[in-house]
Image (tube, rainbow, N blue to C red):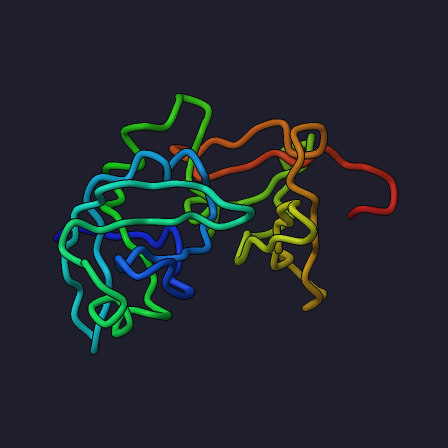
Length: 169
């Protein structure tokens, strides 16, 4: 089964030719789009990307199959999906998808389990790891996802190392 991930969302139209004004999470991925899937009435439909331009904080995407505002409007609010394998193949060795962090165990320098990552949030452009503690307290632990604090991410071993900083844990 083919697994798709969302890389953006159609927010509105741009111009009369049916170009989509889209919000996006990663400009490199959006700039190199070739084939995408848009969701309409619960079904995903395949589209070919004709061109991508950037304007302010939005991507302007022209699809080969859509040539007017009326043809685009049913997709307003739709997420833009691509094949997950396509993204993974373009990642460098030390890169990974944020969604791959969910479910990883978080350890401190002594290899003691802190807890399990259950969410990743973005705040002012910074990612925050949300960790459910391994024992005791039900409060979530919030850790800034920065290399100085999280120096090791091992997707294969399903673990991250968190450097203890006073007041953080």
